[in-house]
Image 1 (spheres, one colour):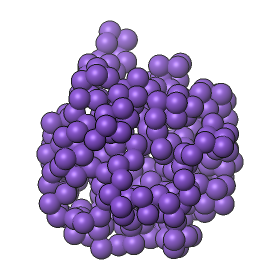
Image 2 (cartoon, helix red, strand yellow; image 1 turned 90 degrees about the horizontal axis):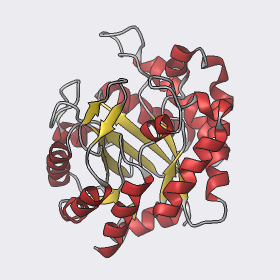
Image 3 (cartoon, one colour; image 1 turned 90 degrees about the vertical axis):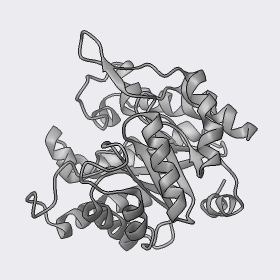
Image 4 (cartoon, rainbow, N blue to C red; image 1 turned 45 degrees about the vertical axis):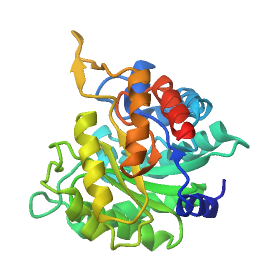
Length: 295
């Protein structure tokens, strides 16, 4: 599947399958809770490659790179801001190696900077846009097939991310997905219709919902978003709400079978690219893919 095939298949109404969670699955493989997944791009690339491959074998049409936190601003929290170029390029190479010759697209993941923009914080929108532009440049040059700006919560930061990506490549397929962790609002109070009104008029190809809180609340956000946009919708909810075990590790109670059973309703109310976020294992993804292909 080529970049143009991706958009053409969406335009024809085909349902595609994305991947599952990166962070929570890497934690199961030994990544310390709280550590950036990007650390393993350099220290344990085999684990990332193994996870990418597991999602592909489970049925993913799109797999994301381990670059969610690979802007300079976010990497600075781990002391890795000087390694942003090598981390982004290596992450793409790892995922491309996992894909090989299979008919699967590589999505370059871009998450928030981890800092509030001015006037609430010290980072200006221009600085954020430059940081996103820099990351997008590395991802595009390394050969991603599409860019996924994900888990956004602030309209100013999301617009800076879109502008940054489009200053690098005006044609690459672009997804912009928000996280609604206050039910049907983001942590900054953004409602789905407001997100669609602003982001949907920018040069993006797909709008999305990912992460957030419960499956029921994410479904309501999906329903509301579908009512106000004609763009395809990317939908990657968490595998339910996490509960912490005695060691402080998150545990997700929604089973793969239960999550797969919800997929027909996701598609019925507007999702066209389905997958899962936190807690979504390859086993969950296999059930999601099986259900999506039956619809």
